[in-house]
Image 1 (cartoon, rainbow, N blue to C red):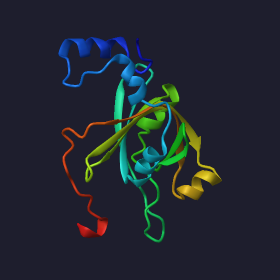
Image 2: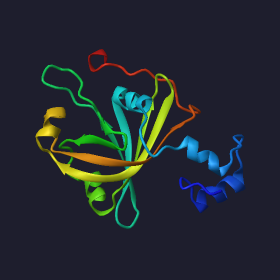
Image 3: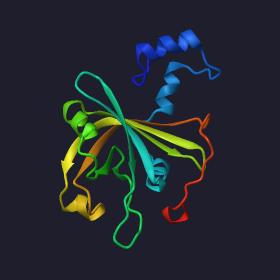
Length: 176
């Protein structure tokens, strides 16, 4: 039985290279979820940064790093907010002015998000459809300096094995 979470290219590569993990295609339905569970939401809320991947209308990819900001008192703001089982938001702040990610989202809503906890050697992947939101009162309540936010409608969420995640410690800004 084919899984809706896999495609012919992935199946071909699994046949070609194999894996020490033997699973039936239907196993993907229990590994990959179409929603965020409470433990996944807690994991996302604990992260100080994550990575995103977007692509333009021709499929040319761009990867970006997103990190938390701090309020006027120096307290960290959430890097990403889980708004519901199938929705999360993250802020966009003024940067270099290229607007690679936001521009890509306007022409191609597909987005991949990768959350990695290097201290615990865990990772979580989120794939979905993104939309740029203008910074309104709700967004500014969460992220006062945000110029916009990205709303992600979740399509796939899953954890990966910790293989090859280096064990690293996050150092507070005042420790360097």
